[in-house]
Amino acid sequence: MNLAKLVQLTGHIRSNVQPDINIQQIDILFRIGHQEGITQPELMEQTGLMTGSVSRHLAKLGRFRNHKTGEMVGLGLVIQSPDPENRKRLAAYLTPKGRETIKEILALFQGVQK
Image 1 (cartoon, rainbow, N blue to C red):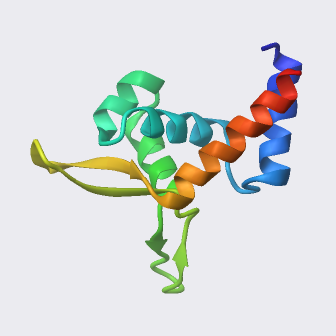
Image 2: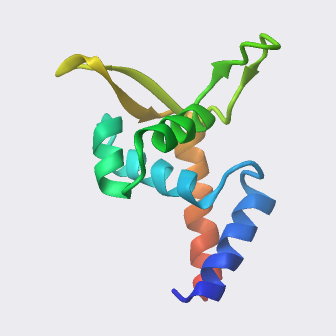
């Protein structure tokens, strides 16, 4: 896929699937879909992003309470729970909405490739 097609696909995703998602969050979402239960250190290693960046992207992809307003914010595509192998770490999983979002993105990707 060339750069123009990638830009087109990102625009379609933001227009048709999820307007508040960026390319790094799409990358992380697909990595979680590919490896359910992936941890933040594993995401850092795979993406080359730093701890703070991965944390912010996971927070945005998930749901959390805004400390100023008390409102629940975030995309609701990912949940994090303690890693069964090491309870000090969190593992990331797709929510049903996250699985559906990936399906929608893949359908758009197939359309853009044609």
